[in-house]
Image (cartoon, rainbow, N blue to C red; front, side, top):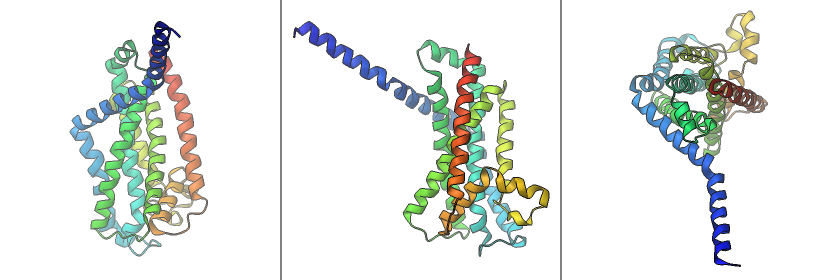
Length: 271
């Protein structure tokens, strides 16, 4: 084999390798970009981190004594609901980030540079996972400081982290759909209110049996309730039952539908 042939084959191998890893490299770059943009938006970052903490303190110290729950302490009962509210609100910020990118025209510049649109959107979702991780740690630390205790092992805590990540991943892609639908960041921010409402209309803060009959059906069958049941069972070492599979099915369904809608909407907006 001649040196020229060997050089060409080596060059083709390098090209194939670059082509294979380019989407991953682009996604990592876009993820770092989204994280940096989040750090610059101090007001929104502080709100997303400390608002759920204030809500938990409000419920525990003002309302907790008047609410009967199966747990000895109200903070043990309410922590999963606050975790979902926190991560859901942080994930909803993805909607405004996507809308801002579409409105400011940066997507066209990225496309001219050969950056895939999917990498940009995936970067926003990855940034949402990072933000939610920090927010969840802050919530758990606060709960421990005000009396929450759990004697489960590391495996159950990993299950809690995995369940939260699964929920945030699905909600973040759904937020990207709303971000592509909205024409202004202000319009996209309305998605956060819808996400924050769901934990209230679940068993996150009060038992479903204490709710009016007309809302119990919705509270028992909406996607947040099985996720809360799974988190509560993992944190307290009680049987999870079918809640884990129901939660996984909801999250997988939300993710799958959102991915399809995101791809379709992005093609329409950039055509």
